[in-house]
Amino acid sequence: MIKKVDHIGIAVKNLEEAIKIWEGLGLKTDEVEEVPDQKVRTAIIHVGESRIELLEPTAEDSPIAKFIAKRGEGIHHIALGVENLEEHLIKLKEAGYRLIDEKPRRGAGGAKIAFVHPKAVTGVLLELCERKTE
Ligand code: ZN
Image (cartoon, rainbow, N blue to C red; front, top):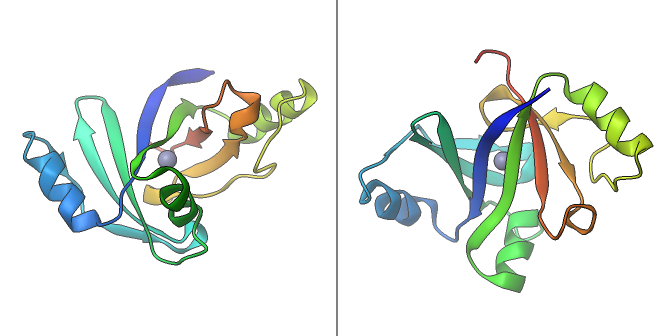
């Protein structure tokens, strides 16, 4: 049911500068997308089958802005690709995992996403992510 590490989310202050840095490594990024639900602008970097998701806050109360204020730029979350997100969330809740999102919401690229609290997962903010086509 868990398919793979779908992507790693990285909090950045300036998306255009971050894109330049990552493209300097020889990688390609998709078009920048705004995700109003999470108050971020994102750029997806393709690395073979995996992705890196750069996240720039668009508001001071964005979770990414708070993260950067507290800890600086860096790895923000790890996302696992799953097949049936709703079902996963019910199972995790039953198993006692502390969820940030009990219902899926909309992420970049039209994916359904939900976050599990870092205190529940060895200090890692975990995103579960379901994509339609793969
Ligand atoms: Zn993500």
